Image (cartoon, rainbow, N blue to C red; front, side):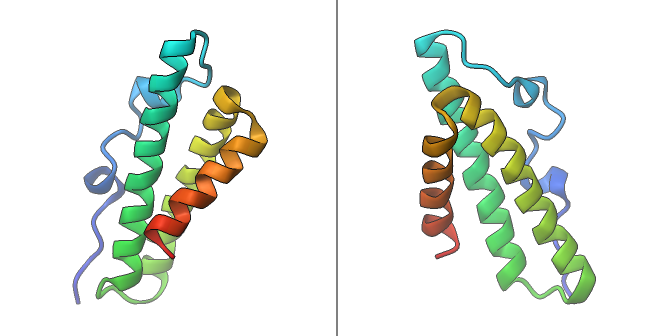
Length: 101
């Protein structure tokens, strides 16, 4: 049985000070924050997809995928501070559809 990669192996940004910020004060900085958040969301969805298609079974697999989706929710909140709730939700959905289908 193959084990799933740990969260630190799939998304090294966890605990990073940059991922803890929740505001987009300047227009240019806001754009880069949005791009960074969307990239982090992509990484979480990629890791979740690997969890779905991987060889792991049972609770460990579920816990891994659940942790990825919980992190996406954190990024969604941060994204909403930059672009608003409606646009953040649309972006999250678009990226979900690209990765998970």
